[in-house]
Amino acid sequence: MLYQFYESQRSLMEPFSDLAQTAAKVFANPLSVVGQSPFAQRISASYDLMHRLGKDYEKPEFGIRTIDVDGIEVAIHERVEVNKPFCELRRFKRYSDDQATLEKTKDQPAVLIVAPLSGHYATLLRDTVKTMLKDHKVYITDWKNARLIPMSEGEFHLDDYVNYVQEFIRHVQHKYGNCHVMSVCQPTVPVLAAVSLMASRGETTPLTMTMMGGPIDARKSPTAVNNLAMNKSHNWFENNVIYRVPAKFPGAGRRVYPGFLQHTGFVAMNPSNHAKSHYDYFKDLIKGDEASTEAHRKFYDEYNAVLDMDADYYLETIKVVFQDFSLVNGTWDVVSVKGKLERVRPADITTTALFSVEGELDDISGSGQTQAVHEICTGVPNSRQNHFEVKGAGHYGIFSGKRWREHVYPRVKSFILAHHTNGAASVTTAQNSAVALADTAQPATKKVASKRAPTKK
Image 1 (cartoon, rainbow, N blue to C red):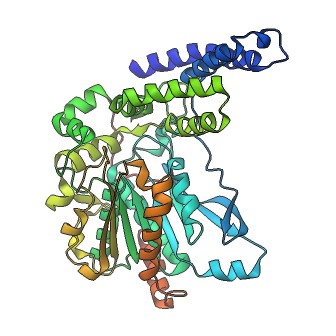
Image 2 (cartoon, rainbow, N blue to C red):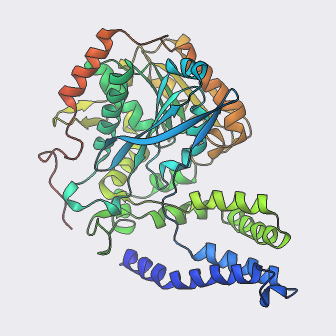
Image 3 (cartoon, rainbow, N blue to C red):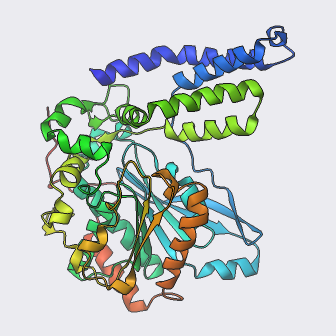
C-alpha cells in the first residue's frame, strides 16, 4: 500500500507544484503588477523552491551533443546498439569533418562503462562519459526503470545482470577485437563476476578493468549503507521495502524496490547538507546568482530522478554482496543463460589488467572495499595492477566533477592506453569472440523461459 499512497500523494501535489512554478515566474517578471513589489524576488524564490521540492523528476537525458578534441568540435550521436528487456547498451559515436581528428580517433580504445543499477539513472555518469569521449570510443549500460517493464518480460535477477554484462562485452569485442571495461560503484561486483566467468571458460577477457568506488569486500571500513544491509535480515528487506508497482504503470504488479525509498535513504544519509543546499539555492535566487542556481538545478534534476529495481535483483544483491560476501569468500554461483550453474573464480583472470580507484572520504563504499579486488584476482601479475586513492574526494568525486577530470581521468586514460593493443586485434581473437557471442547470447527481447518461474505473492 505504501507505493500506492506515495503515488496518490504525488498526484495530489502535482497541480500545486505546477501552480507554484507559474507563481514564481509571475513574481519574477518586473513587468507584472506583483513583480514590482519590493518583496517580489523573495516571494518568487519561495514559490520556485516549493515547485522544485514538490515536482516529479523524470529520467534526464545525457544531452552530450558535442565534445572538444584538441580544439576541434566533434559531434556526438547517441544511439542504442543492444536493447534488452531491462537494459539498453548505448553508444556515443563521434563524428567530425576534420580528417586529422578522424584519423586520431579511429584507433582509440573502446570502453564499456557499466553504470550502477542502484537507484539513479545512468545519466549520473554524464560527466564520466563526456570526459572519456575525448580519447575513447564509449559505450554505457543504461538500465531501465522496472516499473515500466511489463510482467511479461519476466523477472530480473543478479545472475541476469552478470549475463547482460558478458553479452555487452562480447558485443564490443566483436566490433573491435577487444575492449576495456569501467565499472562505477555497485557494478564492480557483477562486472568482476562476468569477467571471471569468461576467464574460467577460456574466453577472451577485456584488456583492462577499472573498478571505481565499489563494494568488492563490504566488510572493510563498513559505511552506514553497508551496516543497514548487514544488520537487517533478508526477510526484513523483503517484508519492509518490497512493493508491487501500481496499476497506472506498464509494469503493474511487478515486485520492486521503489526508487522513492532509495531516494529517501540517500537524503537521510546527509539531511543537513541537503537542507543547507536548498536554503543556499533560495538565497541565490533572491540575489539573482544565475550560475549558482543553475548548478543547483542540474545537480538535483539528476539526484532526484530515481528508478525502481526489480525485487529479485535487489534482494539477491543484498544477500550476495553485503550479507554472505560470496565474491570474496569464493562461494558465488551464477546461473548462465543456458541454465548452467557456474562458480565465480576471480583467480582465473590472468590477462586483464586491473585498476582500482577509491575516494578518501567515500561514505558509500568505504576505504579498502574496492582495493580488495587485488587480493582475490591473484592470477593477474602485480605489474598489471594499480590502485589510486583520490585525496579529499567523496563517492561522487571519483567519477564526476573537478577531481574526476583533473586527477582521476588522467590516470585512467594512461592505464588504458598502457594496456591497449595498437590497431585492431587479431582476426583470430575477433572470431573467437564472435563464436562465444553466438554460442551464449539470447535474443534481445526474450528471456530464458525455463530459468525461473515468476514469483507470486
